[in-house]
Length: 390
Ligand SMILES: Cc1ncc(COP(=O)(O)O)c(C=O)c1O
Image 1 (cartoon, helix red, strand yellow):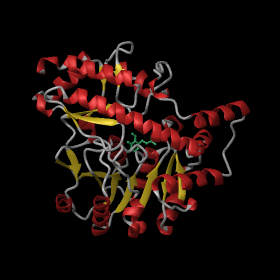
Image 2 (image 1 turned 90 degrees about the horizontal axis):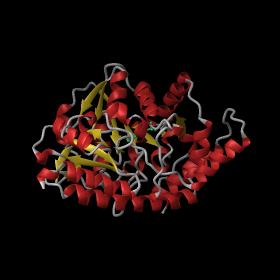
Image 3 (image 1 turned 30 degrees about the horizontal axis):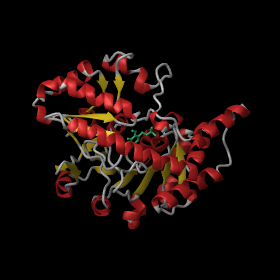
Image 4 (image 1 turned 45 degrees about the vertical axis):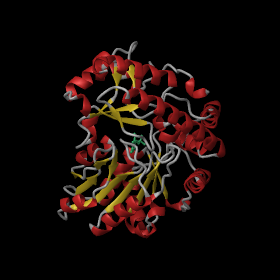
């Protein structure tokens, strides 16, 4: 099983592994890195072959003639998600954080409120604040150990100064796969409050067995005039360093606005990313993703069983993503103490929950996309670090 290979990532400028000592004080030779959302796996052979072909050719000029690249995106969305999109509606950005910055700039004005369903992917708030917009937190409700949406509570927060909602679908952290009626509810909410809806679906291929992701245009076909879709190959195929993402906009007026933003910012395709993404969105890539999800599901089960056996710790049941969201409330410990146990005693780097916004304070997020032996090691380390609670 290729996912079992333990690949040494130290000394490769990996933010996940090479920054752990500097940021967490966890020694590189003893630590276990479970923070940043990239995987410790090689991508499928078809992606490797695309890079090797480029390297063998050895001329790295500007990229052009993107018809096959667009077609690969159309094919993937149709085949994997049942979403029939027009390839002319696709823009290519330097990843989805870049895309978030661009959509914020294109469709909102300084001082506008932008809604986030917290706790949520931390880069959204960082980007919004840096752009001089205001984060409006709409906290998710915790119901039976899962996040749910309390639309009435959100309605009461609206002041009229809001212009956009950024949805994370599936949700990071917590791994909810939003149901059709929840997506419909988000769409209706945006219509009610006249908001642009940005649907970041970067995790849409990493869905656990028994759950089904629904692309927003399928859940709410009538809101195209306010919908901006964000998708990418990078999370699915572990090629985040290629910095490539898709912004897909069906509405002519919204698309024209975004086209001028792309032009103004001088954004054009990264040749490596374009070649890798096209190779990934293929039948061979699809077979690899199916095997990957099965493996991640196995990791999830082992991690959850081990963590939930520690009194006071609860791992939220993941419906999607490889990012386990562990609640330490039941330990009665202050965040400084449970973090010290995880980082100093277990020597594991995990993301701090408070960086995801309100509701994340008592959590840590653990990346489980790593060889199974490391998951077993992580569980053993955590059981020892919290051994006095047994
Ligand atoms: C919801 C979400 N959007 C975007 C990103 C990052 O996108 P990119 O690497 O393309 O900038 C992540 C990374 O974890 C994410 O979870």
